[in-house]
Length: 264
View 1 (cartoon, one colour):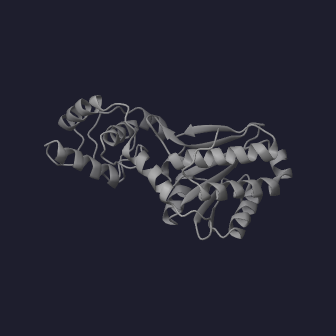
View 2: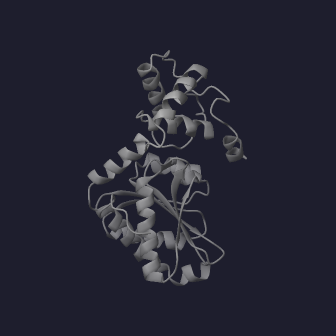
View 3: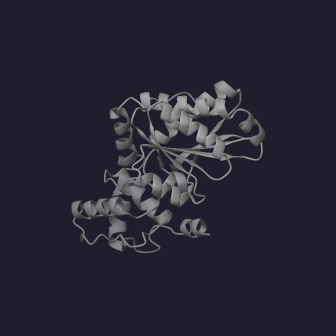
C-alpha cells in the first residue's frame, strides 16, 4: 500500500522539503533525478527526501538566485524544469561518483564489511555463504529479519560495503536483482549482479536473469546491493555448498575489480 501511495505522487503535487519522517515518493525521485542531471548531487535516486536531497536543493536554489528555503515549491520547480529541459539525458552526478568510488576502492576482500541477508527461507545457504566469505577474510554481518527496511537500516549502521541478499523461489526461475529506477541505476549493484549471475550460470548450468528493481532492500541500502532469488528449493538445498562457494568467489572477483562490467 505504501508503494502504491508513493507511486501516485507527481512532481508539483506537493511541496518537498526535509521532514521527519522523511518524505517519499516518485515525485522525490523525479526531483533527485533532475537535480543530479544538472550536477547537484542529491545522492541515490531512491525517492527518499533526505539530507543529501536537501543539500542539493539548497545548492540549486543558491546557484539560480532563488530563495534558499530548502523547499521544492512552485518557483523552484519552474526554474528546475526550464534548466533540466536543456540538460536532459545527462547521467546523474551520483551515478558518476559511484563509478569513480568503485575505481578507487581497495582491491581485496580482507577486512571488507559485507552484509548478508536472508528472509527466513534459506538460513542454511546464508550460513554457508557467510562461512565462505569469512574464510576469505571478510567481516560479515548476518541479517535474517523478515522486513527489508529493517535489514537495510542494519546494513547501513554496520557501514557495509556491499549487501548480498538470498531468497528462495518456489518455481524454477532464478533472478539476480540490483537497484535501478527511471534515469538511474546502481553501478556497483549492476556489476555485482553480473558477477553473481555469470558465476552461478557457469557452475550450475542455468540461466540467471539480471533485473533492475526498486525493491526496498535495494533502494534503502546505501551500498551496492544485490538480491539473489534462487530456485527451485530442492535444487538449491542439494547444491548449498557449491552455491555458497560460487557466490563467495563472485563477491571476491567483484571486490578485486568492481568497476569493470562483465558481459551479461
